[in-house]
Every structure is written in C-alpha cells, then in structure tokens.
Length: 111
Image (tube, rainbow, N blue to C red):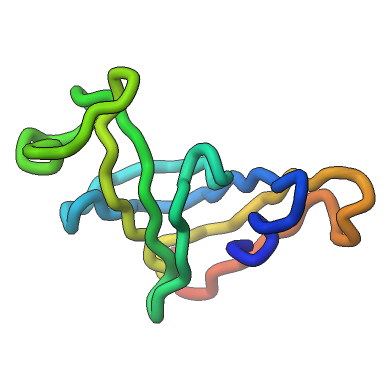
C-alpha cells in the first residue's frame, strides 16, 4: 500500500481497523483514509506503519495535542497503525495503474 502511494496520480485507501495510536496514545476507531493528503510522511515500520495526520482539536486528548502545530484548524500529529489492528484495506486506484481497483488484506489475528 505504501509503495502504491508513490504512483501518479496517487490512489486512496480506506483501512478498516480497531485502533491507532496518536503520539503513543491509543484511540479506538473503525476507519482511516490513507492518501498523500490525509497521511503525509507515511513509512513502514516493523509492526505496521506510521505517518503524520491532522485532526480537529476536540478529537484528541489534551496531552495528545499539547505543543502540536495547528494548521487550518487541525492539529498535526504523528500516528502509528499496527497490522494486528487492521481488519482489511480497500484501495481506490485510477485506470491504467496496473492493479485491481480494490483489494482486501485479511487479518487472521482479528476476531
């Protein structure tokens, strides 16, 4: 998925997941949009991936937003996603990018 974000024009992915971590603090969730605009500076880690992202201040705990940059009313934070928390990924790709328009990554650890 991360490598595909470098294709021009870049695709967009929707990840269905249980949780992610913002500045090390766990947040429960059901979905995450991944694209160069939504999740800049994305990089793979040994357990999943991490990236920068932006949230409305009220969506993040006071400790999670303390000292963080605010851009257009959104707090810029560092997010981590662990593969064990991902249920599936659906990708929306452009015609001619040489891969299917969607795919699913099953997670055998997900309940």
